[in-house]
Amino acid sequence: MTDVEKREAAVPAPAGWDYAPAPEARDIVQLRERYGLFVGGQWLEPTDTYTTISPATEEPLAEIAQASADEVTEAVAAARVAFEDGWSGLPGSERAKYLFRIARILQERAREFAVLESLNGGKPIKESRDVDVPLAAAHFFYYAGWADKLEYAFPNRNPRPLGVAGQIIPWNFPLLMLAWKIAPALAAGNTVVLKPAETTPLSALLFCDVLRQAELPAGVVNIVTGDGRTGAALVESEVDKIAFTGSTDVGKAIQRQLAGRPVKLTLELGGKAANVIFDDAALDQAVEGIVNGIYFNQGHVCCAGSRLFVQESVTDDVIRKLKRRMGTLRVGDPLDKNTDVGAINSRQQLEKIQELVESGREEGAEIYQPPCRLPEKGYWFAPTVFTEVAQSYRIAQEEIFGPVLSVLTFRTPEEALEKANNTPYGLSAGVWTEKGSRILWMAERLRAGVVWANTYNRFDPASPFGGYKESGFGREGGRHGLEPYLRFE
Ligand code: NAI
Ligand code: MG
Image (tube, rainbow, N blue to C red; front, side, top):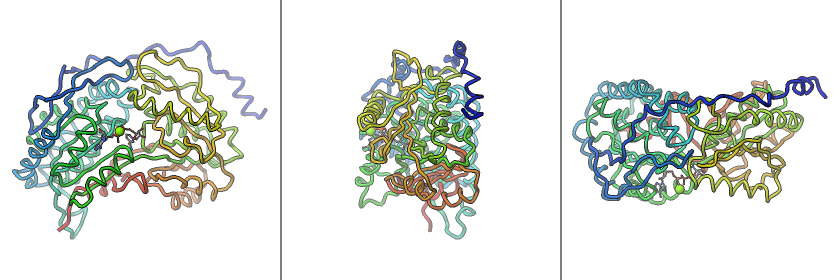
């Protein structure tokens, strides 16, 4: 036994200790029974509806509009009128005022948004409270600052807005993705029709209240809810720009649908990020980074560190520490402030995770899940790690989008790099080492839009985010994030 092992063995995890329930009060959220479409500053009565639920309990929450192609056309027309009748002609400093107001209101109503986000999406309240909502507000603040400085952002290029932007977002970070899409679009002088994901429409619908409170002119932002058919109708409509975040398959379909049309496109798609641990890394910190990389938001993260590469000489240590740490993750009620891992977003996503995990077992990988009792109702999956994984296994190739980690090993930096880049995706990566020169060497060669060094899943509105290869194209965040919403004269 090494000294470290002795010390760890001497301090057993306290078996009988548990955390008392610490539920966040839910009554700050006032749900309506039924939501219409937010078009031209008004709520339109929908022709067709479906029920949105809480994935943690399967409890129905509200009736949501399933917008038809005609209703989408109406929303795009409202956005066009708003663009031509004022918004595009407003001085940037005036647009900035609205964005600052929206940011402030999001901060004021932060708790309400956090509870709603966890209720409808299943993510732990501590994440919606400390990550999603503050970052969403930060995006509006950040782009408010650019609205009157576009000429400085792109000197001598005379930036002009595009017109109407159609925006389609996923369910893993509903409010944050809304902010990533709407803030730069408005700062650049465009108007918007946004479609939230079908399983998580509620925070976007509450955001319509914020728009009214901020007195944003009618039609500048329109929200249409519904499933993929509504999304496809938006792509088909008379928009000037499509921004999409979601699966690679749908991204490809959108690209085909837009072929030959003068519509600007940005795609932020899937990922299968490599998180690379060298033998000189601070291993305890690295283990925290591994956990944050794959179990944050139940692994429903496009940049999740889902492929772990560990240098052979420290593999046993890292796996042992990781398993121990996994035993302390609390899985359960998303509204409990002590919860680390919440509910899987939908039955469909749970089935996808189960299918891929089954393939991992069948192909011969070794599975480990810490003992944990999952709630009876709702959609749940225990934190999972696979060792003995070969590069060819599906769990090492395909995006699982769940709390499932695949561990692989390497001997040299060259081998780590080659394996890390051996993926059709290229969104993000992590490198853990004490050596600054090695960080730079890796970061230069990893084919990934973002490379984190000795940290993981860090976001800042000033920092551009986006992918290579099948992870998509275009950048969101930073000055780069304005460009997809501008043309240059
Ligand atoms: P999806 O790509 O079908 O859904 C994302 C958004 O696109 C939703 O708003 C959806 O309504 C819309 N959409 C669906 N079909 C469309 C179409 N034909 N035209 C226009 N919009 C359409 O993703 P889904 O089915 O929810 O998840 C499947 C897998 O995709 C996940 O398991 C995960 O691997 C990946 N994914 C990646 C995300 C990311 O952040 N990069 C986010 C969500 C899913
Ligand atoms: Mg889909």
